[in-house]
Structures are given as structure tokens and as C-alpha cells.
Image 1 (spheres, rainbow, N blue to C red):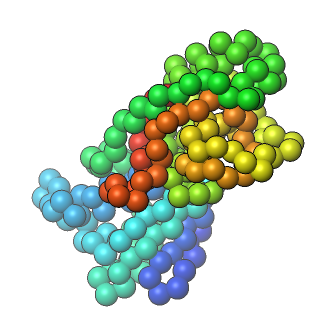
Image 2 (cartoon, rainbow, N blue to C red):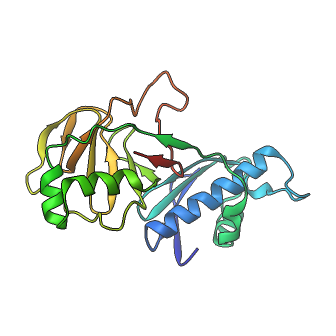
Amino acid sequence: MGDMRILPMGQSAMLVELDGLDAAMALFAAIEARRTAEIAGPHDGVRYDVFAGVREVVPAARTVLVRFDPLLTDRGALSAAVRGLTDADVSVERTTKDVTVPVMYDGEDLQSVADLLGVSAQEIVARHAGHAWRAAFGGFAPGFTYLTGGDPIFDVPRRADPRLEVPAGAVGLAGTFSGVYPRQSSGGWQLIGTTDTPMWDEHRTPPALIQPGDIVHF
């Protein structure tokens, strides 16, 4: 999992700082896999009791927040167990899903992104829709998920002049990430399309359509 620094966050949480996004995603997947195995019961005759009290795992770009019940899990033991996780722990089955988001590629910045990357607008569309993206972490607004792992061509700067109003459903690019604005807001991402698929629905469980670890197809 690489180098990590574990910091206490109150009495019932700890923040794990890592080298970067790949390490954060791997650790999130490993903790979720072990936690899922514990909830499901013995896995191949082994119980992962130290993870029994883990209540929530929240990934970010370089950190993973782990919330736990201090009455069920000792912080020191949990910290040691987290440090001991390996890539093999990710192989334990956990619940993720494939999400398909239909897109109308009519974004205001589509042509400028194409010009920036030295390809046609049609090729931007083909490359964006032709590669599966993986949900890394949520942020910015409820239902906004940072997607990574698309076509290697996508590494674009944010707009020099952010928009005051970006419509809900706008599909954008920033750096190596893609994402969908869940509601109208300000924003500086390069907009390449729109979708009618709601990213956030308070009556849905969970409310966010895309969860960390999910595979997204545009």
C-alpha cells in the first residue's frame, strides 16, 4: 500500500494520509473488502474481527477517512491492521457496480478541448465514451464523483475563468478527471457534454448514483 501516516480524528475516526490517488484507492478498496468480509461472516474460516467496528470509509485524492465504533474496535489494533493491508486484500469480493451515463456531447468547451489536445471534437467524444472510468472519490457537491482511468489523452487544465453557473448534468474534464455536475453551481471544469441522468436523489439508497469503486461508461 506504500507509505502512510495515520492521524487521529476525534474519538471515533482516523485519517490515513498516502502518497497519492492510486494508493488511496487501493487502501479504500482493501478496507472495504475486509469490512465487507467481516459483515458477511467468516471468509474461508477466517474472521477479520478488527474491522467489525468500522462504520464508514471515505476516500479522497490522497487520504482515506476511517470511522469506527470505539466500543467495538481498538484504535491501535485497527491502525496496525490498516498498515498491514496488502494489495491481495483488494481481491476479497466487495459490492461495486457498472453505471452507464448517456451523454449528449454538446458542451461549450468541446472544441476548445479538442484544439488544446490537438485532435478533432469527434475524437474527443470517441475517446471519452470509448474508455471505462473508475469512480475514485466524492467531493465538491453531494453526488459529484471524481472519475479517473479514462483515455490517457485526457489531462486538461481547468478554465482560466470559472463559470458562475454550470447546469446540472454538465459533463466535464479537469486534469485527468471527468465528472458530472449533480446540480447547478459555479465551476471551472471544461464542459464537453450534458446528461439527463440524475447524480443525486435523496429518495434513492444510497442517494449518489456513482459510488467509489464503481465503473462508469459514458
